[in-house]
Length: 125
Image (cartoon, rainbow, N blue to C red):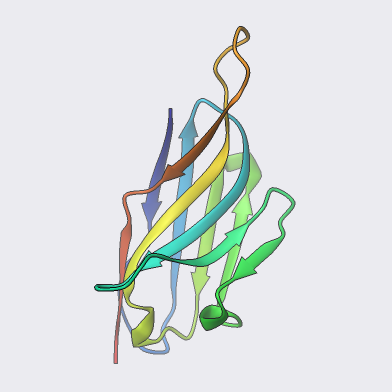
């Protein structure tokens, strides 16, 4: 089983910055993509940013140039540096990690898709 621990959310004024982090632990064989999603009240969950094992990145158009995603493979950790925050960035941010779990020498690795519990980001105007 894979567990995710998120941290770094909070309340910030517009134009401010926050950094989110998410650490994955458990019986991990390998991690492919790591990403951040967000969900605002009354809206669907949306992709914010994603980074692959090869460090290729994707960003939502609304955050390009303001947010930067990065990962430390050795620590199974992903970060989201958020700059020039806007009130419309207010949402519950979720970490997502996809990869393969280590089930021991007698079983092949099994794909997993894990989600964090969410961390609130609130941007005041």
